Length: 430
Image 1 (spheres, rainbow, N blue to C red):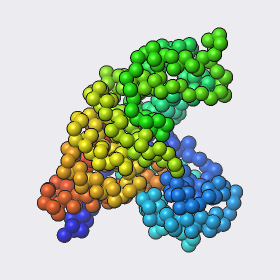
Image 2 (image 1 turned 135 degrees about the vertical axis):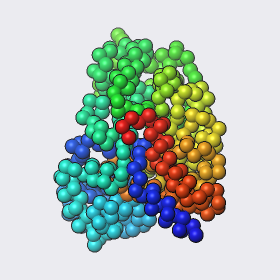
Image 3 (image 1 turned 180 degrees about the horizontal axis):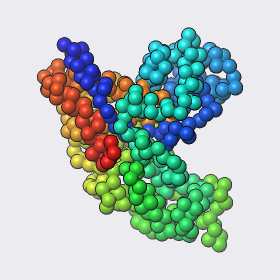
């Protein structure tokens, strides 16, 4: 019976238009790397980490397009087979099937897949095929940094979330020089820095395609941001200046202290709070191999949730492996939302089980079902396919339990894939 419910729900959800809450793909197709092939492109994020975890050590060789494709494949093949069935691996096979009509990537198909990949790369219409025709995505929310604001963003497909982590922890003279060039403000003190930050914010949100703020601070530090005074933050900031009031050379590296970082996070939250701007926050697993996962525990953000009640916090990646904790936060805080971006390929089973739990514990308008979170365009197609299947499986379980019927399950699925993110990010053109 559950399988029949799944088929009915999936048959509906596979065809609906959806909103993609988070991407890293180039802001326009013309910015795609042309010096690539399928193996190099598909090693941009995610599956390469599983290969390394499985023991593969020749990633530079694997992504060197000057070397014969089949020789590179044979080098990685034993490790590829070990990692093939992870969410990351399955997503790539789904992408190959959806885009190139190839059932799976292996020694018998790698050359054909690569030929089709290269043809699509140079076609000039691959974004439309992947995002509109295959994935049925109305719009994706692509992370951008300050310098991206000057790129030719293809707003047919892309809205943006602005990440200003460089204002929270500038890492060298180049960061300050870039801010000065972008704003025309000479940085001599913390007050100048705050003025420049607000200048960038006002400029960005004057456009109609910047819809949220974003931070991935959990890659660098714990997500607890204490309340500190201006003078404490100023003392940290002043460490970047040298004798005579000159800050370091452009190529010099430094790290401003934690109190300054904490102050800047609260500064960004205060700005968003006044304007009711949603704030996307990376929580849970960090991409790549080896990091301090406890930095990204979403409970560390509790003081921000309590203090900035007019900011809707979009909490990324279901907080995995803290998904149960995130369900409690979304239950008790009206301004905390669960975002399933990336999560469907981190652990498909965790996503299904979490959705089953959330149906019992969290108002269902608090969940956005999909964000591809890929740097390369092909991966989006496989990921959205997995997301539609996972949501259908979870909803079928609740139908079998008698919580609601199939028609209600379809409505809930559409709400999570489209209605909730459209409302959360105030998307006018989706």
